[in-house]
Length: 135
Image (cartoon, rainbow, N blue to C red; front, side):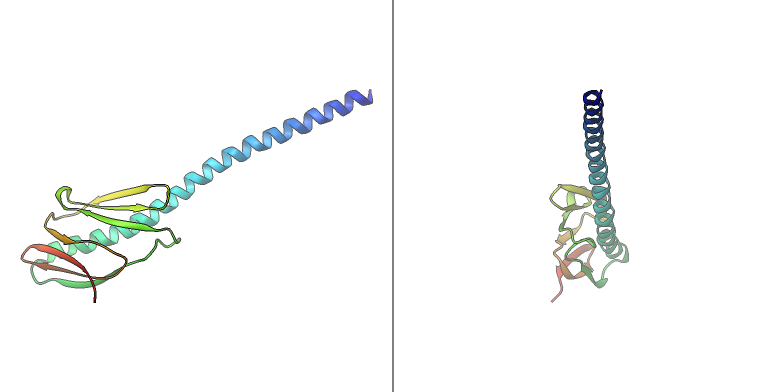
């Protein structure tokens, strides 16, 4: 009788450990999805800010000049890069090692320059929006 009880206990412990591993694997998948979504929200915040600067310069017209900052990293420390696609009138952000990206439509295709990290000057000269690193 003791042998059977011991065997049942071992089987129950093995089953419990297996169930724990399945639960932890599922939890890891959910955590990765939440982490990606958090990066996406932070990246879209930077994307909207940069698109707003471009759109503002396009709407204000000739003679508009403004200084603004592009952060070195997202608020959680993730690396990112901004790209302007004038022909498609889109601004794109790519972030992290996971290859996440997002884009937003901008109002003008008349653009010159690109975004780097740090201070920038944006100006509108005769309908063309110029983006340049601030001195």
